Length: 139
Image: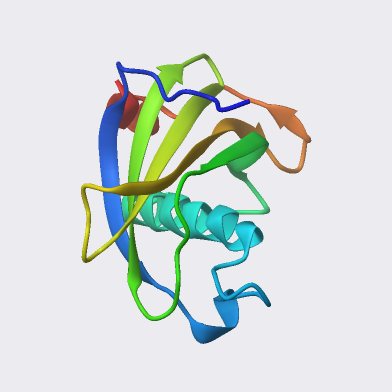
């Protein structure tokens, strides 16, 4: 089942990630697990750009679920353009979506996916309201 990305999503970040030789599997294309890594790299780069690095002694993001639709293969050599979008925003969580394309064909989406991000107080191990500064970036 292919999950659809919502139409009302907001573009919040773009990054280019190099495809490494070791990203490929025995079939000669990028292994499916690396698509999740590309989304993670994009999400973390966006959080750092917002001034929100992970803080195990305080608060930060936790992924509640993740999905990926594989549409076309990535192969070495090349670069992946990952565009990050935000969808629905709740009290303590928000949905992220990603489109992945080769940098030499940025309009041809090769994969898309996303994750629900929950804001957590790590010492207390429970969700907490999104910080106001982050919420302002999401709305």
